[in-house]
Image 1 (cartoon, rainbow, N blue to C red):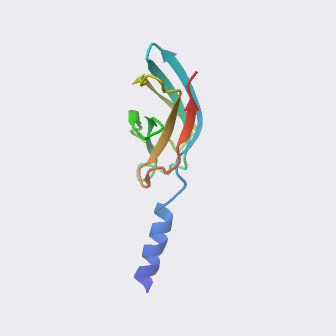
Image 2: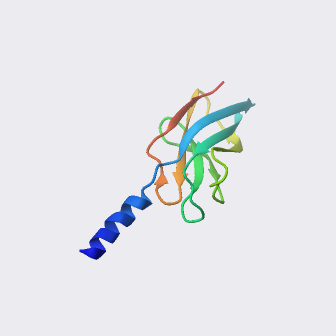
Length: 115
């Protein structure tokens, strides 16, 4: 019983709040975009932090991925950019999906209308 309780508590600790997309700034130049995405996540250090975000089309095609290589526990929220994202013709909205080292890719996507 003691081990079962430890496993239950460990599982509940591991599933923390997903990274939240709080702002996105888009700059278009030609057929490419630069996206500056601001995330909020309760990073606790190297064992648990927001470790990336990606740009997707409505049907889930990944246009670009921004890897975050370290925790930002003392810098919340924080903004990181990704340039050179090629936009397919006719796309008027992209979606941002954030990732956490522990929980993986979030189910939630943030729609971003293109200027």
